[in-house]
Amino acid sequence: MKKRVFSGIQPTGNIHIGNYLGAMRHWVASQDKFDNIFCIVDLHAITIPQEAGNLRVKTREVAGLLFAVGIDPGKSTVFVQSQVEAHAELAWILNCFTPMGWMQRMTQFKEKSKDQKGQVSVGLFDYPALMAADILLYDTDYVPVGEDQKQHVELTRDIAQRFNSIYGETFRLPEPVMPDIGARIMGLDDPTIKMSKSEERQGHAVNLLDPPDDIRTKIMRATTDSLREIRFDLKRPGIYNLLVIYELFTGRNRADIEARFEGKGYVDLKRELAEVVVEGLGPLQSRYKELMRDPAHIDSLLTDGAARVRPTAERVLAAVKDKVGLG
Ligand code: TYM
Image (cartoon, rainbow, N blue to C red):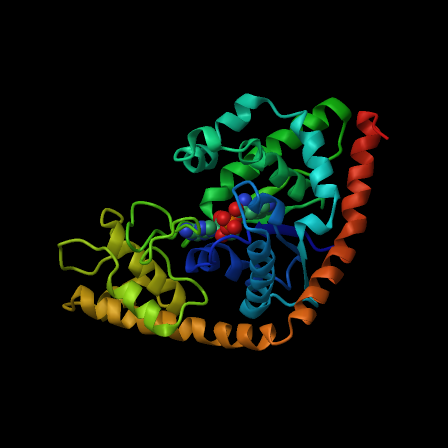
């Protein structure tokens, strides 16, 4: 029996190279080794205001991107969270086993709610309980994510352990899995913050569907420092981030990269990096265009995906309800 992998992605904003390098490409790379489920989490998306038509468009766009980067529907299941009702139902039950204090510690909530003050929804606060439900419904072994989601997966383990200790073995305890390099790609305009879908500034992120000239402009304008040497040095976050992106797109090792840019300037690095990223995203963009010619096919893959996972989700939910005394 293969181990189960589960991960999710929100259909909000534009999917960027941080999502790709930190998560999506690893989902593709380990497809053969595991039994994979990837979820487009539209219920999570509505924790911040969304326009209905746009949310539907984005949901299909993310599905198209997942298939375009190489998720193979023959090997992995891709589905939309709201199409499997068990997610919302288990989230409610888990709410009742999650102390407020655990949620209050979540750094992502603190960051996301900082600028919203009184407008913050209860849903945003409760976001990690829904994420725990996503993961626990499928007897998940591994959750491949970027660094920002690690705390949520650890909370999922805490919630599962608490439930198991009250009712006996019910949930499998999932483990977060993060890449050694690229788990936290930083913003191009501000390398002290992570690259994020919710930052709307033009030069912040390279999006997977950006046209080549936009990619070039964004990379050429990326914030660096006033030094010269091109080295992997964590104390120089701007240049470090560009080098990591270069490393991940080319697959070259650090010593070779430093040797290649010996005596050269930041402009040379940026020029070459821009071409590497344009080339790296090219095939994915063509596959995406091709796939989007037939949106009904994408929708049918998603419907099939939901049908495939529903029985597992319903079995786990039924066991939980039985233990709790519901229904
Ligand atoms: P989301 O949609 O924000 O991001 C999708 C994946 O991309 C990773 N990521 C990054 N990795 C490296 N550098 C970055 N700058 C960067 N930005 C994002 C994220 O860590 C994530 O792996 N809460 C999740 C979605 C979710 C989920 C789940 C994930 C819902 N339920 C269950 C795993 C399991 C989220 O908002 O991801």
